[in-house]
Image 1 (cartoon, rainbow, N blue to C red):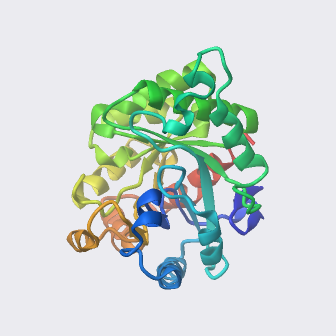
Image 2: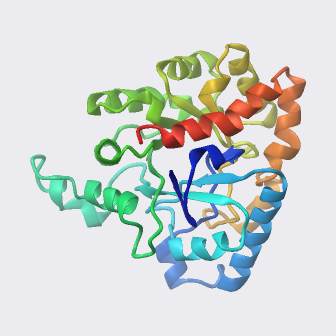
Image 3: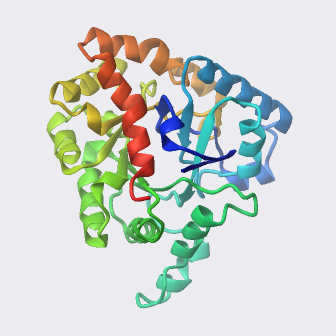
Length: 320
């Protein structure tokens, strides 16, 4: 059974799934202290319900939402939305940083001495087994990040904590990676050391590169590749994102990919007007434009079903 915001469901009932979508991405301290841009909470919730209802109307049944600490996770807010949308939302636990750990962890546990326990592990395990912040909502997977700065001391500490929480619970792991600098290989090294099976790991943002040999190496090792930023044209253009998925399908690797946009109903990382520069970065881009383009390049409906249905269900159940 897979944990969703509304409770457990069978992995076979997840249906078409987008593997990496946020509802909100927020800078929590800024929003709490300077909330003017956020505005009316009820209006934001209503807007999210409308957008996610459109996605459900397009045939998507499930989203994996990797919004963890560092990205403004607020489970009571997500509960309000999930109660009004015919969509499974699977939330995550973990920590999002490209460099150092937050000050909260700096001088605790391993931050004081390498022989001390890692406090992050217990927090992540609690979110997975007992629920998040008293809501009763259990996380369905773990999330961390290794970006262009690479395996810094803080990033490695979080990645190892995520690996240990996975081994304690069986929950699958999603790792934000920087594809252009081939950070998936560095992730592989650390997770191998921790004894994590590649079948339980999704490497996010692999679609940012067109290096088919690099991606094939990771896929053939057993990792699920997140081709998950469709519409984010500032990082890679539409034609490149579609073509690399089609090329991996030609190589027989449709069983190693998941699709998504990595978008949100609202993200405060840029001026709101900046979204106007990215008109395709929305929840409906894949059903409306990406899937037809893949079919034009020879990707079959069977391969699309693998990427949207079979692969996400297999990954989210891995290790359980």
